[in-house]
Image (cartoon, rainbow, N blue to C red; front, top):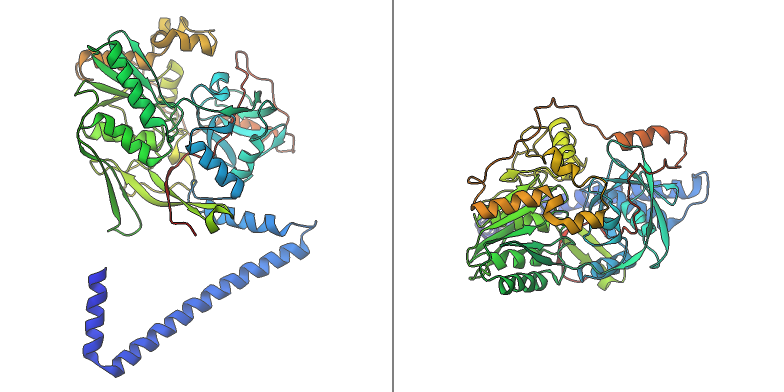
Amino acid sequence: MKRNTLLIGATAFVLGASSMAYIGAVANARTEVNSSAQLRRYELFDSILEQARTQYVTPVDDDKLIKAAIDGMLASLDPHSSYLDAKAYSDMQDTTKGSYGGLGLEVTQEEGAVRVISPMEDTPASRAGIQSGDFIIAIDGSGILGQPLNEAINKMKGEPGQNITLTLAREGVDPFDVTLKREIIKPKAATARLEGDVGYLKLGSGFNEKTTNEARAAVQRLLTENPRMKGLVLDLRGNPGGLLDQAVSVSDLFLDGGEVVSQRGRDASDIERYNARAGDILNGKPIVVLVNSGSASAAEIVAGALQDRRRAEVVGVTSYGKGSVQTLIPLHGGQDGALKLTTARYYTPSGRSIQRTGISPDLEVASSRAEAENLAKQTYQASEASQWNALDADTGKSRRGAHDGAEAPPEDFEKACTGLTRPQVVAKGKDCDFQLTRAIAVVQHGSVANTPKVPGLPKLAAAGPNIPGLARFQARTAGGSTAAAPAPAGAAASTAPNAAPSAETKAAPKQ
């Protein structure tokens, strides 16, 4: 770019003063045309604002109108660009520091409703059984379809100890109510245990400022408990992402140098690369990374880096597919909040953009027979690609549609855990977690190729896109009612959502 500028300057000098005057006049004319067009757009906005202020059927609030215009402008770009007022900006900073008040959910917006990306590990929402892909369609009996995401999030916030009722739409069942109790969320970034001679490390609550230090300490503790540990399962299921630098430093724990991820902005030359330092905390021991459709952004950076560098194999189902970077731009030092703007896509070491497509597993393993059936029959999947305004992949690739072939738990495996509460399921560990069982098997056999396969379900015909729970709710509420149906039998009562949508965030110069 700099070279082109210099060449243009040299040509203008050779042409002489008259040519310089002509070029200057053309440039000024273009500037005036651009300024005039921009002025007309501002005048159009001002005219519409004035008509709304003076002609709408009821009095309106100017600040709300301006805020709605800003929200609409940014929402037209992609699902992750947004304006945060001063309070929302402060809340997001608390979230990335690892402590905040709320319900423990990472959410986004789709089909006019708030959709759960993932419940955070060991929070009221996860303990209650709220699932990735659930739609939140009403709060305390008031419908929120079509409401700006930040407003819905703010409604879910409140004093710890206060109850809140969410109406959820879940595929295959009628909408149901879940009553939650708000809490101070202090998710533990890393938990670890030994599964026989295999280590298990869970990063389930997002990538905050504590994640790398806690992960390092957890792995060192496992190695102390069993110096002959055969390998490690790194569980990123349900991890909604977080800070980019933490994704890089977690990957760095297991890589002996080399690239982790790159990000590329609007300009083709605007490429930033992030590399690991020398030293692998496991000294080459096998690693298997577990992912599911709730594994997003920073979690996908880690999974993609370890997969591309052939340091780990990936087990589970295709991840969420959020491959974009958001920059937090404080406005007037944060006094007027901040702009969260998508400024780049990120790419794995091999040059893959996983935006919309996600990280595909080396061994596809469904968590349940129902999930295997959904993979085979449903072309609709809750993911980044299912959002109407999602940024494209920049590679011409698309997310995999309905397909057979995923390994599924045997019927007797599922029956042994049917009817158990979530705490009981968690306590049984791999005995009620088929994906973890298969990941451990891959570590023990050394690779996916050497691991004996488990049959999937019989081949099933693909069906069209379907979101039954949401469709039934929309049909039932066409007359304006937002009363929810009773919870289905066995549905757990929840106790908490909240948190701004997950994003790879980095700091920007203050304004």
